[in-house]
Length: 253
Ligand SMILES: Nc1ncnc2c1ncn2[C@@H]1O[C@H](COP(=O)(O)OP(=O)(O)OP(=O)(O)O)[C@@H](O)[C@H]1O
Ligand SMILES: [Mg+2]
Image (cartoon, rainbow, N blue to C red; front, side, top):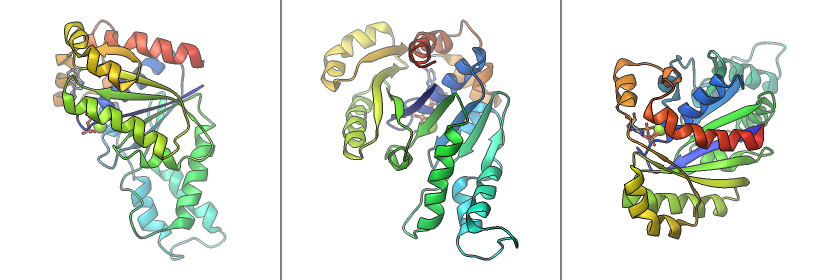
């Protein structure tokens, strides 16, 4: 059992790494995987190749803003849960919950509490949960019961990515996110680049657990609209992440 969250600077490969984690678990028969896309600019639906029926945020706006439209005989709780079920997209070997827009200033506290409780209950039904996060870690901090076993901090070989990695660590501590283990992933980098960056990486105080090479096949898949679940064994991105996932999930299964 593992709950793995991915965080880091925009554009560094969070969604790609999260999608490859789903691919890995499916390839090992560790299914069903619950995928939570907690980035408001959601795109796990695209990288995993399934349509998103409705986001949790949109469902909240549509249904939770008032008492209207609640079918007779349903309590508010039941209605919210029913709406949440609509937001859960079923894929082959995984289910995807897309959070969509954040809670915002107008507080539907009642609905949000139910959403949180529902998500915690839902997560309990799956052996593994993979969560793609936005920079602010908002959803992660709002989880109530389940701990995040592994927080994967992703960066490319750029200075800004590394700086953002440090911020993730500080933010997670500040927001009291319950993290079992932090792991640092250097994406789109050669071993030489990783070696050259070692002094910077050591300053992060995050263990570098994987260096993932550039893989042109990811771009091809994106352009062709192909799911990353179909990325083949032997491709640089798959081979570059397999030891990482072996490490995470061997320890957790
Ligand atoms: N190892 C890699 N080799 C080649 N291309 C990559 C690699 N990792 C990611 N990419 C590409 O970089 C782009 C950004 O990746 P991705 O969407 O995973 O980043 P992100 O951190 O989730 O971005 P955002 O913050 O916008 O959500 C994508 O086009 C993706 O295909
Ligand atoms: Mg992303």
